[in-house]
Image (cartoon, rainbow, N blue to C red; front, side, top):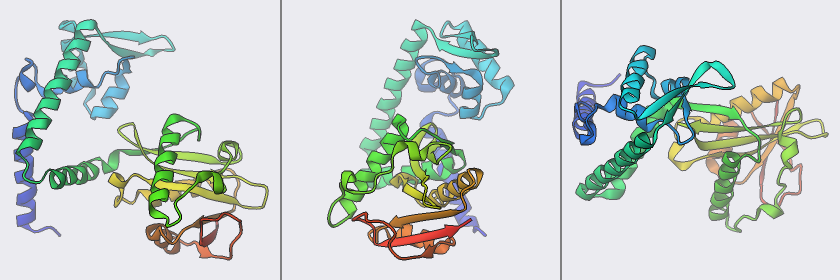
Length: 292
C-alpha cells in the first residue's frame, strides 16, 4: 500500500516532466505540430516502417495513428505504400523533406537534453535516476525473441557478457579458454538462443546448448546492467525451460562462478540442485542440474 505523500511525489514528477518536455505544446520543439505527430515522424526508420509496427511501438489507437499519418502525408513528410510482400500491410516512408524534418527534431531534442544536463547539480545521479525511471516504465515492453546466436544483436550481448566476466573474475576471462558453445548447438532442433529486447534494443540473452550426453546446458545468461532488478534473468531462465520442453529436453545443467553471486542465488532459489563438476571449463566453481 502506497501512502499519499508518495503518490503526490509521483504526480509532481509527472507534472514537471510533462511541462519540461513540451508534451502539451501545440508546437513541439517549435516545429509547428504537437508531440503526437512528431513522435510518429521520429518512429519512421530510414528504410521505412510498417504502420502496425509504429502503432505497437507507440501504443497508439489505430484511428489516432491514421489521423497523424494523414497529416504528415499532407505535409509532404511521409508516404504510405503497400508492402510488396503483403498487400494487406502499409509501409510508412520518409520523403526527402521528412528526413530533413526528422533530423531537425533530433538536433532540437539533443539540444534540449544537453540544456537539462547543464542544469543538473549532480549529472551522474540525474542520469541514474532517469535510467531507473526508464526501466520501470518500460518493464512491460520487454520482449523475448528466439534469435540466431550469430545475429548481430546476439553477438553484441555476448561481447558485453564476456567483457563483464573479464572485469569481475580475478583471473580475467578469455572466451577461447572456456567451453564456448558451438553456434549450431544453440539452434533448433538441438537448442535455442534467446535475446531480450526493450524497444528493439537488445538488453539480455541466454543460450540453450544441446548435446548428446542426455542433458542440455544453459549458457551465457546475461542482463544489461541498466535492466537489472526487473526479474529479467528469471524470465529468461523460465523461457529457456519452456524452449527445452518444446525440444523434448528433460534435464538441464549449468555452471557459474562465485564472482556472480546474484546468478548463484537465482539458481538456488528456482529449483536447481547443486552437483559435482561435470566439465573441464577453468572458470566455473558452481555446478547445477534441473529435471523438467
